[in-house]
Image (cartoon, rainbow, N blue to C red):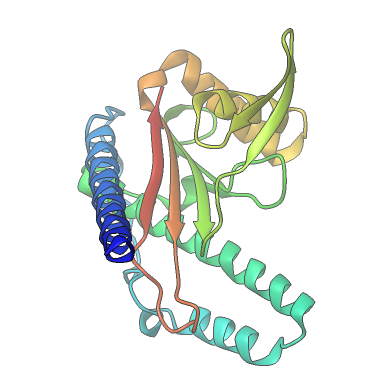
Length: 234
């Protein structure tokens, strides 16, 4: 009887966790839509956009499907397989964040302009930054972190008067620190980071920090719908 009660208790906990997770997703979804609807840049200039299919299944992303299937089939050495999965996760994260950005902008009545999107990779940078209408006049800035598969938000350790402090990806503190780091890197990173700073000073309500996850199943057959994992507005 005790073991049965233990199982029932565990099942009840699992149901609560699932309900809490579903509720959190709905809250993030509603918050994201509300934030994008409330942005107030100048009326956008119409820009032609090629139709882009939804990131629901790999059947709609044949190239990525072949890439992932090839990785799963050919890279059978453990070390190479791990590297291949990382590469695919990063690519999916990038595709997913772009897809979600376009979706949120369109729902808010804003026209997506691909020339305004700046993609970065590696350390000491954001995955993407959308600056509209240009780096010189940043009226709307959406800073993006794209996560593929089961990738989690990272951290950055900074020195403070109180000693080392960890900043978590997705927080305003992390955003501000990353902007300063990008400025120190020069080149395009510095230009984009400077535009973010300008927008933060002149029109902070139109600066959005959003993280998007695009998961896929272990058999590499399906990509699940993109999911907002955090959203912040200055």
